[in-house]
Length: 314
Image (cartoon, rainbow, N blue to C red):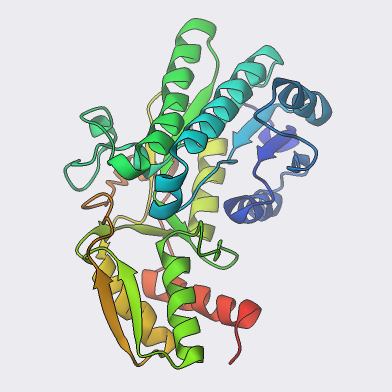
C-alpha cells in the first residue's frame, strides 16, 4: 500500500453520520480522490449497481460504512430486512471489490456481533463464544459475516480485507428520528421535547441497569482512517473508548444537561438489550496507534448543543 494518499477511495455511506466525518478526516490527511456513492444513484443491494459503483469510482481502496441500522425498537420490527440488506450489501461489495482489483477493503462491523453474555471488557477473541443478544442478532450476524468473508478471501485469494468493530457512536449530525435512532439521540430528543412541552415525566425503555460504551464520531473517523492507512491484518479489531456507563446514569446526564426538571419513569416491559457492553481497545492502540481522545461528558455536551442549535427552540 505504498503512496496510499494517491490511491482512489470509494466510501459507501460516505454521506452518512460517520461517513461525513471520515471523508473530512481523510481529506485533512491528504487523501484527494474520494468517491461517495449516493443512495439515489446506487442501490448497493443490487449487483448491477455495485458493479457500476466500482466502475465509476475506479477504486483502489473500498471502505464499507453503509448499513441499515437502528435502535432496539427498529431491530425488533425489521429483523428480516436488517439481516438481508446488510448481508447482501456486504457480500456483494467485497466480492466485486475482489473481482475488480480493489487493493484493500475496510469492512465496518458492529458491537452487536458479540455474544449476549460476553465477559467485560469484550476481547476480540470472545467474538465466537456465543449467540448475540436476540433483539439485534439478525443485524449483528449479518455484519459478522463480513469477518468470515474477509478471512476466507484472504486465505483463498490473498485479498486484503480488514474488519473493524466499533461501539455505539454519537455526536453532532446523528440520527434523531424516534423510529430509528439509537439511545443517545433518542434520549436527547425525548428530554428536550419534554422540557419544551412542560411535561413532568419522560418514559425510558428498560430498567436502566444495562451498560453501554459510546465513542464520539470524530474519534471513530480517526480510528477508521488509522486502520485504512496502517492495518492489514486478518483479525478483527475493536474500536471504542474503553469505558461503560449504565443507561440510568446516561439518562440522568442527558436530563441534567438539557435542563429537564421532571422525573424519569422506566418502562420495564421493554427490553434492556445486551446486559453490558465495554470493549478491550488495546489491540487498536497496539496495531495502528488509535486511542479515543474525546471525553464522554464533553462529547455529550457538544452533541446536545448541536441538536438544540439545529432542531430546537431555546
